Image 1 (cartoon, helix red, strand yellow):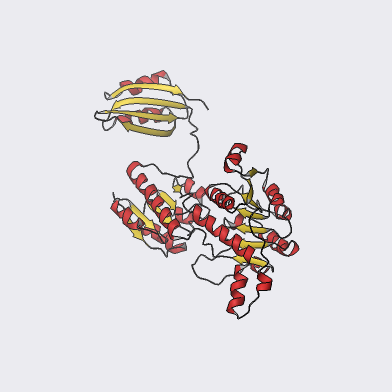
Image 2 (tube, helix red, strand yellow):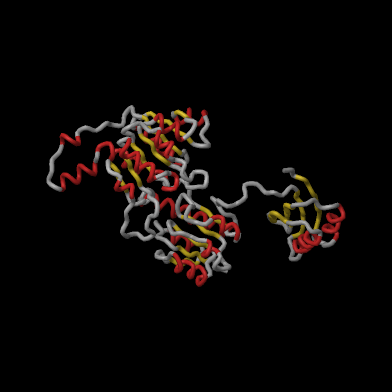
Length: 406
C-alpha cells in the first residue's frame, strides 16, 4: 500500500518532489484548516499529515482510522493536541533547530531596531520630517548584558550572535549546567527572575509547555531595570502580556514581539492586541521568526527525512510522544526460523497466560533464514510457558528470558 501524505500547509523547497520520489502519494492542499482539514483526513485516507502553523485538534485526530503520524514542519508542537494523538496511538514529530538561525536573526533585528528606533526613523522620513536630534541618542549594544531565557538551539544561536556584538550574556534554562555555561562563555542564573534582574535586554526562547506557561510573569517583569528591552520571538504563552503592558509605562520598557495571544489563523486578517496600544516603544512582527527561505528549505528537508525514514523503517525520528522508557521489566528473546505463524504461536502463548506485550522488535539475520524477536512484557513467564513456546512450533530454535529491572 502506497504511503499517502496529506500536506495541509505551504511546504518549502523541493519537499513535495522529494516525497514523491521516495514513493509517497502526496496530496498537497495548503489552505486546509478546521472542518475542511478534518474532512480531508477522512477523505484522503492519509497515513501521514504534515502541517506548519495549522491547528490539529482532537476531533481531527479521531476522525479517521488511517492516520499514523503527524509531522509539524517547524520546531514546536503546541498547535497539535499531542495528548489526543497519544490516546489514538498516533505519533507526532517535529523539526527542532532547523529554524534556529532565522529566529536568532529576527531577535537581533528587533533588538537593533529598538535600540536605534528604526521604525520611528522610517515613519518620520516618509512623512517628510527630519529629526536627527531625537534619533541620534541610541544606547548601543557593546558591553550591555543580554539575558537569555531558554537555551535550546535558538537560544544558543542568539548567544553566539550576542558575543559577536561584544555583549555580556546571562542565561537560565532547566538544562543549563555550570560546565555548559562556561563552554558558552556566559553566566548561569538561578531563575528567569534572576536573569531579569541582571540584564539590560531580556529575550525569550522557550517552547510552550505546561511547565513554561506564564513563566515570565509579573514578578519576573518587575525585576527588570527601568529602560530595559524585552524580546519575545518564542511563544506568547510563556509571558504575561498584561503585566508586560503595565511595565511598558511604569518602567519605560522597549518591547519587540513576534508572537501574540489569539493570532489569526489566516495569513491576512484584521488584528489588534492591547500590548500594541500600551504606549512607549513597542515593535511587532507577524510571527515570521522562522519565515526565511533558508529556514523553510531546511525544515522541508528535515520533514522529508522524517517521512522517508518512517516509510522505510517504521521508526519516527524526532518523535515527541513516545514514552521515554518502557515500563516493561521482563524480556523474552525468541530465536526462530523466519516463517509465517511463528510469532503468532509465540504471542498466542503469551496472551493466553494473561501477560501483556509492552514492546516488541523482530530482526532478521542477514543471508540466513534466522530471526530474533525481543518481546518486552509486563509480567514474568514461568518455565512451563517458555517450554510451551519452544516446543510448540518446529521453527522456534530457542527461548531465553531476562528480568531487566525498573
